Length: 242
Image 1 (tube, rainbow, N blue to C red):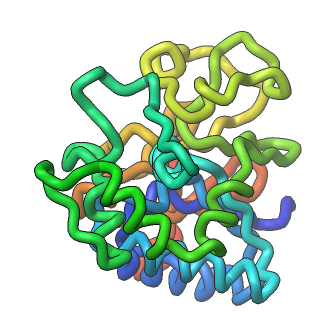
Image 2: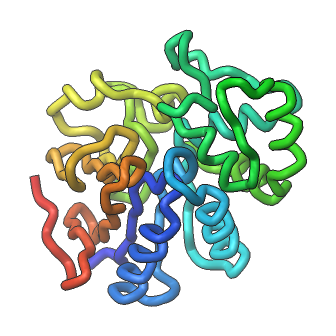
């Protein structure tokens, strides 16, 4: 039987939910459980800073954790550059600090008050002063994907028909409809988040773990053994099947 590997869906600043599912994982697989985090650690929830600090601390302790980059993590990373970069995938009327995207709550977790009347330059300067370099380094080093013999982990999904090794960063971070509508088998079972669903769901060729933590819903953690997988709950494993 394959060694268990755990995956955690989009966290979106929900520190208490992260702590809850880490406890579930440790109860199931021990303190050294292999975990893949699927990205979107920040935005919308109240404690993006605390989430990053928890993940960075686990990394420093040498835990076998892998961190995938989400589109929200890249927006945060790009805002923090010397000259903020705008995400071209967004509609022209949206930007990272807009309340729909949640960058405002991320900066609030670092003690920065942003309102629509604030001057962007002043907010950017305050953010550059407030966000620790270790958090910026963490964002910069996030991986776009991770794979095992049976599984391919990414944030949003893949472009069907393109070899896994040739997937484009934009698709790995942003794809939705083309990936969701594809029902045939992929080279491996795709494990992803990015698009909220009511609960973690297995579609046969992919497993979506974004259960809406960014909107106050419970965070999901799943354990895989080969292709088989189970949702972790307070009462134990629950089979997750197509």
